[in-house]
Amino acid sequence: MAKGKPSASKFSGPPPVINRDLLHRLNYTYQASIFLQQLGAASSSSSTSPVLDRKGKGKSKEIDAEEDEESNVDFASLARQGMQGARKMGVHNQMKLDPSLKRTVCKSCSAILVPGLTSRVRNRPNKNHFIITHHTCLTCSARLSFPSPPTSDYELGTGLDGPVRKRRRERFARNQGGKEGHKLWAGEKAVEGWGVQKEDDT
Image (tube, rainbow, N blue to C red):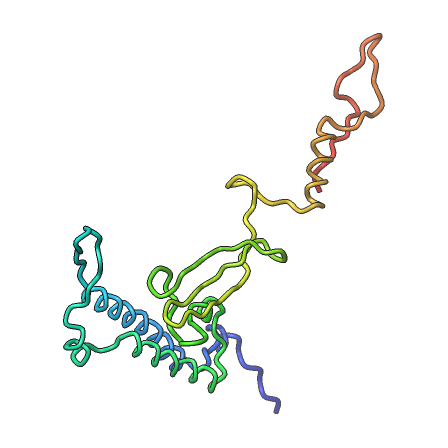
């Protein structure tokens, strides 16, 4: 007796996600690293206060830096250690991460590259590409460069046509009136619009 084929209802759901628990752990580590870096930036900015010298120029002076070294926790180093462990976990389990996620992590010190907080972003012209975007890590001064998509000169809301479609549109605009066919005369007057074949944009 032949076995029946499995019904399609069993496979109607979405496919199972491989290493779901590891992906959740990586997501938590990534968000925790961003939060710890923000805490480290806030604690470092609060430990300094502006002081005016004799000439009236402002200088930043640390307040009780030696006493606060033991009590304060280096949140930035904790964030980097967490991301280093997450990267090792991803390599060990062969997890395929999104390129947009990998571009936000420094390859040298594993710091999360937050523009304006832990990284500096600059756009530079290049011979081979339109624009090269440089992300410079403010922790280790490492630089990550990748090409940016080109910017169009067209106005917003207009589509970009390729060369083939552009020629079709130009030909359709020229032949908008249609091709002349056989003329029908009524006495000495030609009948307008008779025998005109319209050309469709196909």
